Amino acid sequence: MVSGKPSNIKLFKTGKNFNFILILMCLTLVFLGKLDLIAVRNIKAFLSDFLAPVTYVLNKPVKEIAGVFEDVKSAGSLREENIRLKSEIRKLKVINSKTSSQELELLELRELLKVLPKQKSQIVTGRAITAPGGIFANTVLINAGKDYGIKIGQPAISSLGLVGYVQNVSLKTSRILLIIDINSMIPIYLTSSNWPAVVQGQSGNLLKIKFLSSKAKPIEGEVVQTSGHGGRLPAGINVGKIVKSFSGKFYVKPTVDFQRLTYVSVVTNKNTQPNYSKTFQGFAPLQKPETSIYLKGLNSRGKRIIESSKD
Amino acid sequence: MIKNNNILFNLYKVSKNIIFFIFLFYLINFQTSLSLFPIFAISTPNLILIIIYVFIVRLNIIPSNSILCFLGLLHDIMIGNNLGITLIYLLLFKYLTQVMILEKINKNNQDKWIFFTMIFVFSFSVVFFLNIIINMSVPNLSPIFFHVGVTLILYPIVNISISFFNYVTELIKIN
Image 1: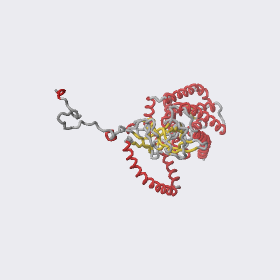
Image 2: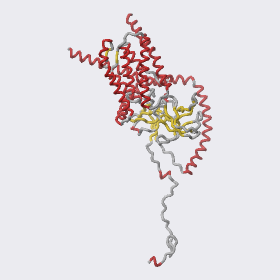
Image 3: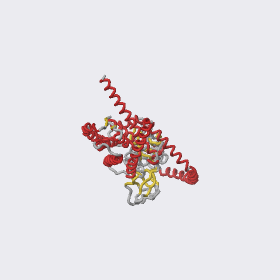
Image 4: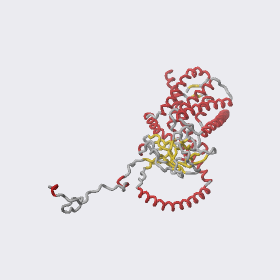
């Protein structure tokens, strides 16, 4: 540590160039980091692993205090919440009775059309270690890594919908890039009109809709789900709802509350190979030649055998 | 004996640096975890820059470049930022503070606040434009304005708190 008294101005001036060189070196580092070199990624992953417990311990007190504030806030609105939940249960019961009959019908239709069944994916759930703080980056570190079969690019979900996807994996931890991050782009479709589009994060609360057809007319409150285009993310995961801004532009509001993320599940595809022998019942197996009784003087096709050719 | 003193002095310097680093590291973590509070859900204030400024201007303690480098890198890794962004932010802030403050020392509190505003806004703008270049996209501006606004409002509060703390300790000393 250098004392910053006026007598040290000379010393500081000699170090001016050094400071400038240091800032230039940092700039180089920024662009090197952006190149996403494997070595840089590995170093980052190793250090994330190493720092995870420290970060968890340092964040714990603030997390607890924030939890207390949240509890106090929710206790105040407990009665209203109870009434809202009761009415929601009533509605859900009605919907449930309808869907159970529709589900059976859907299964039958699927069987008739020989639609490929959905891949059964495994889910690994980890606890969020860090808060999604930072104005330039929106990521969360979870305490599950390569050990549990997590790989880069796999989708991360919560009970409410899509959280993001895995950006970096180390042995014990994984970094999840949240859908609100500026570097995140998710292929989606509007559930009512079936129009495909892409949503991009803006480092804010809303997601920007891109590549939406000019013919599409989004409805406010319309549910948006992943389309599965590109094969990276599975289709049908809830992303959010359409909201209209004051300027008349449409945005997507994520269903997930990123500030309250405690547990995050990563969809791992350990058993991605579907069992074709069970699923493809439509193809007939190769037919064996039938054992038949040949009539005297006739071949298997029923044609007459010419005696001379037989000789 | 002189040699021994040198060793002790170096040890003192190293231990002071380590303690300072631990303090700043805790603070940067605290700053990140503030986003768990609903008030700071959009973005968190930059406490670390306020503290560095206060250390330089009021307490005449200038953090070494190595501390800032290490701190910036760790923070970038921890929150998944582009590597080097926080580092540039911290170094630029320290560099500008030194340029503006050390050469024109003895200012009143209002001047210090204005200088802080200028330095902070300039260093933040540099980092912000750097981020735009890297990501090839302009982020939502409301969290950014919130971040800048809250940081600028928090500076005098921190300053007054330190003054109050100093006043109380002086009173205790007199008694």
